[in-house]
Image 1 (spheres, rainbow, N blue to C red):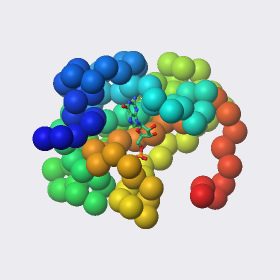
Image 2 (cartoon, protein in one colour):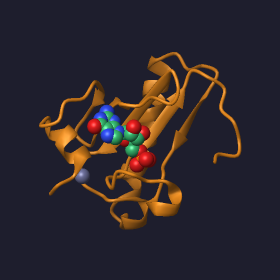
Image 3 (spheres, rainbow, N blue to C red):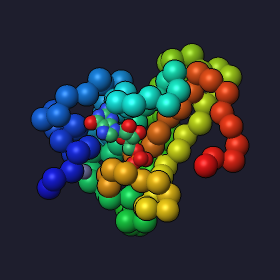
Length: 112
Ligand code: 5GP
Ligand code: ZN
């Protein structure tokens, strides 16, 4: 499958690892939008939240737990933002489910 994040997970495209376990891999975003910008991706290829099945909710929860662990490890005690862009209108550009972890600065609302 010609998927950028599957290639990052299998190591054929290099990345800066932040966290890894049997269910997911987390790495630094190549174009950081905040002092901390990490992508948490499931090892299982799921194109987007629109494609999750009844088997996947625990995995989606796990991604958020991992984001919280990374936030704690990086000292984001003032908070952080997690974002999942879904589909064209959601602004998704890589079709492999991923949680953005953004922190280290104050975030604006609403998003663009
Ligand atoms: P999306 O727009 O799909 O929500 O997020 C895709 C993210 O992947 C973007 O923040 C983009 O900077 C990041 N990205 C795209 N290509 C690469 C890459 O080759 N390596 C890394 N580390 N991040 C990437
Ligand atoms: Zn993939």
